[in-house]
Image 1 (cartoon, one colour):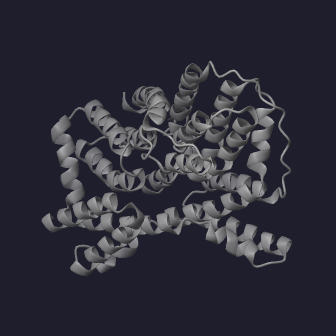
Image 2: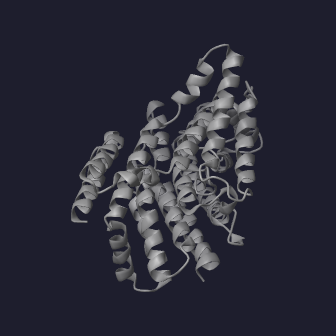
Image 3: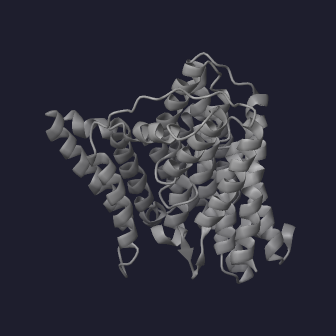
Length: 422
């Protein structure tokens, strides 16, 4: 166990110190676990969640076609046409980004919606900093609302055997979707308080022409099929991944025929974030290794010693620790590591792990909004602003990110405990 802990700790330190190379670090660490025998050869395949990897890849490919069709820009134009000023435009765009982000990767959402904010700001002569930060933090918030909203949600779904509908109703009770939406409503009020004095009128926007409606149909069909799959008893564990990849392939074939070029298939594949997939692949093996060596059970023991046998204290510790950690480190490796720890804690206490799972997901997903580096969507939004000639100070981000995070986390914290903890 000692060698496994040392290797695991070194892996995390190197991923933090070398963010551009974290995928290589995870894969190298996985190889060390295998070569050293800490992860037996017969445990390799079962350590890898292929359903999660396929879901991420397929969803990203479909989303790339959805963005290229210009449907998100068209939807944003329709929203802007019905708001009176900059304050409400900021709120409307952030809520719109949240809705999109419940079904589309957070970074992709920011890349879709941020150009609309830039165009509006340019027309009326205001800085777009506040608007784009609001879009980024809202997209992070809604990532936890559905199974396909964020990589962390997909990780939880895969690990806990949850399907698409389980994020809405689980164990006969309203699920985490409603905790997220409660936070979204309250945080929208925070945005109004912050931006209520920005009352410049908006110019009339030109309507973006949608180039192709098929990607939108594919995205909707993916959601419908994921829901349908949840009703099939005994469906293979890899069902969701197969659905997403199959629809991506169908979309790629269609695009190739429409464009008369093989690029219809290759372009969506190029948009898949293989770096994240490689990172998860390596982490699955690393976690398999530390699990085999008893590290997960030891970590669970530390949590229970700190909190005793009080489920509420452990729930609170997991959620708020996740908020803190995710403000500074990537929530994907954090959640991947903590899921088996949470399960082990629940087993040791003889309780259902649901309240701890949801506490982990909400804390880790929402905590990224505390700092500019806490989530990839924040980094993407700041990068867009920098490219447009606007530097974002930490104070600019904290002014929005901290109250937004607290307004979203506290209601979710109370809601999850009342529904699943009491």
